[in-house]
Image (tube, rainbow over all chains, first blue to last red; front, side, top):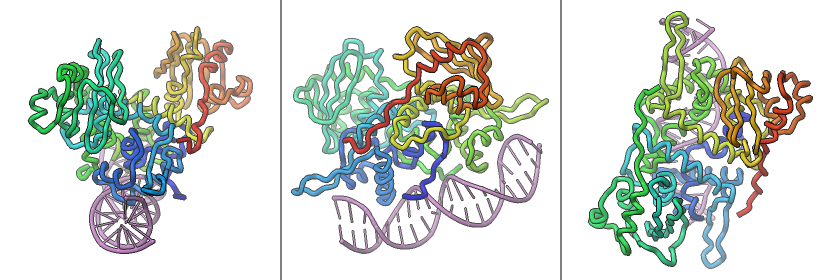
Length: 222
Length: 222
DNA sequence: CCGAATCCTGTCCGATACTG
DNA sequence: CAGTATCGGACAGGATTCGG
């Protein structure tokens, strides 16, 4: 609240850390990237966060202008937390840091991750040089949430919501879905693990070919 | 050391925070971006950091493969901390987060900042759309350190070291130098504040015109 | 002098229990 | 559902001290 711990550094980057550098702050923002959420849903999507810490981060981020609090109209009276436009501008941060960490020698693959985390990883790991001529619209449904993924002109976009028309519709666990993209798991194997896949499987396969895990960085190079 | 606090999140981005998300970690990396430094110099460039925290961060970053420790040959026998190649790949993070924070409604301008911070800010704030036709080589000397800044083809590069040939050579306080770029301080005023400027001032003025502070984000927009 | 290790103090975090 | 209250423990901040 009052005596917030700051770096007192004129560098704009250091001041960004005063805003989003506290523990959990960027993960809270990640969970709001694709739309507002309630306190309880945020807590559920951030395993391990304490309620008081979540309260504190939301308050700090609201003070900084990154998060805005909204109330839904009377019938529901739920409190929603959303990103401001400026807060949503943090998306490149996830892309850049995610791509960097993908080369970590200590990277642990396969741990559970939230649907939002899985969707943001697509932007990090997409390889335009492998996407020549690929056109795809995917509808994803995971953990009560819908996402629309589009590939066209060598670029990828991920948006919240269910697409009106899709080449493939997928429902199930995000880890299994990412296994197809990053682990080169065959579609049949993913189905055996409970992933529902409807539509043109060949589009999914060409979509999956647009992703590739980078080489881990060598230890102690220079 | 042992009981490091982790998020245990499969998201590569979350794992990047396990590496560089601790307090001071990214600022230590910032101070190493343009070359190795000794413990004492790091401490001097990071006002407010405690020695034990710096020790801990350097050890953690070394374990993660971001920092490598080197010894200089016998005559000096100084210990140097450097970034690994992979650590140097964090540069886009400074660019992206710096540019984001530059729009903070609470941004404080004019606080002291380290030479490295000033140099990294150039990459964040450079506006290619304002740099049409500008060609410039600047030699900067601040706080016992030399930097070479080049603008060509609408791009900017910043490297350590003194350029063999330069259009302008500048020595003095980095805050005053940035005042020319971001605060549109006249060159004459900067000289009055003690900045030494030798060479073609018109090149410096065209260089300064390639930078512009963005509008701060509005409070509570959406 | 440089590079830490070692106090000690204060703040923040993590986990759980509890309340409007 | 959306937080507040509480408490132990971990971590940060600051000064001092010690080995090379």
